[in-house]
Image (tube, rainbow, N blue to C red; front, side, top):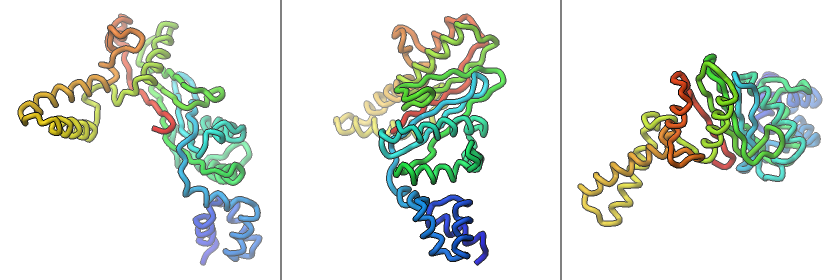
Length: 283
């Protein structure tokens, strides 16, 4: 077995990083069992056992500026760890690297952090130190030359670390205070209403089909005839699309208007929402 194959096998069995496995193998003169013992003594291999547990808590971190903004989810097992200083320091630095990597998670995992070790190795060390499963979850970067990004974070733990985060990209020729206010309000609206898509035609077919099935089953249990079911379900599906598409949602700050009305009120025909993302821990 080659040295590289031994390192790969040791990494798989212990969950330790490449460098730690390499050093342990050198120390054990290539003996895999002894190398695994060395890693356990150092506390590094403990991380692998914790990776089988569930990590449903965690944080959302936003980084970047108005032209390039990123959001990343980092999960852990308990809310207590989500507020741990070592964990917070790790996720804040991780978020900056994520923005630099444009949310390419493969590239992110291989990127070096301030201590000289890469993200993957630092993650294993943090798991061993804290004693909980920690994983990197969803990540997204918004970057468009013709748009500005705005954000909102809810249930903030510290600085740019929170439980819920929203990014929204608005295409506009100017970025004055009125646009900044609109961007912040739109972000808050998305946080509150959790739209599925920007427009109804962008809602995935499988989501519509699932909703259609649920509606049909509900109407059947009520004993409705087939023709009535078709008529009622059509109306319910249209309402579902309207309530879950950002542009046709009722504006949370003025229930007499919809989001599309708020954009029209700006009297800026070139202004439009390009994309958005909302990530909440536990969803």
